[in-house]
Length: 161
Image (cartoon, rainbow, N blue to C red; front, side):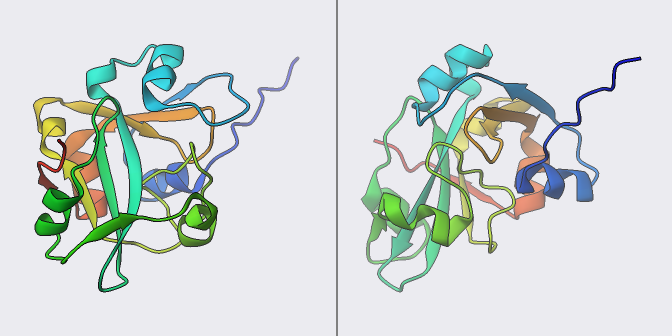
């Protein structure tokens, strides 16, 4: 009898398991960073329900996690206003792992080293389920939008161009 291969859990998956939140895991072959639109294409996830994770730092030095549709670009001024900062800047790529515990292209808003304030784009509210990074390149998670908001104590708003 063949042994079933044990799925390697990420911190994002462990966080969902701990809170007894159901989710679907979608795997895709990819050795390096690709953008969210290509990830959606590889997994078959609807692009409009697929969201990317960006980590920014405010003038106050506080980090923020912004989760927005993969096809859209962030409006830094709008985002700063929503989190009550004078300004926001993307953190440098070389700092992603140190700040989040994840690598570029595999950065999930779930299970980061520390819990930073999370802002989910209001377009996510149109969907029962959303697709986000699973915590490593090659893994996407699908979960209920309401579960995402609850587990991360996330706020919503419009912060795209």
